[in-house]
Amino acid sequence: MLRHFQTLAALVVAAGEALAQERQAARRIVVSIPDRKLALVEDGRAVKIYPVAVGAAATPSPAGSYTVTGRLTHPAWYGPHKVVPPGKSNPLGPRWIGLSRKGYGIHGTSNPRSIGHAASHGCIRMRNADVEELFGLVAVGDAVELAAAPTDEVVRIFGAAPPVVAVLR
Image (cartoon, rainbow, N blue to C red; front, side, top):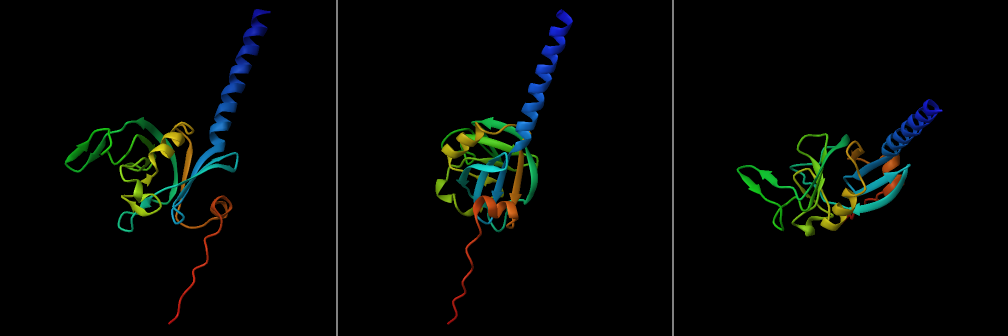
């Protein structure tokens, strides 16, 4: 009887772990670099969409597939010859979600007016309240897609880009 109980308990634990891994695999972040928007996608459906700042022309955000490798609250910023401790003047804001591309991440900002623009050094910047919310919804191992061009999925999530209209004079 005890052996059956132990076997059943082991099966329940294994099923729970498999479900957690499947759930994690179903959650991803998709960033449309040209739209300057980030979506949290669960089970193929966008559950949250946030405006973001992306890399400037001279320091573009790196398109590609990555994973979340770390999460930090109140990070310090380590720049060339300078360290900025956590606080209002910290360019990373209150949260850092590190990506598998070394040196890149999703973070808050000390410059909220940059949101919606190509203004960063390549990272994805969010409003501080937005990155705090996202931080609580994602985990290490979640997939992150930075899309430089519209794909079927990007169009499905964010809609088609408006047509470019040329003005001839």
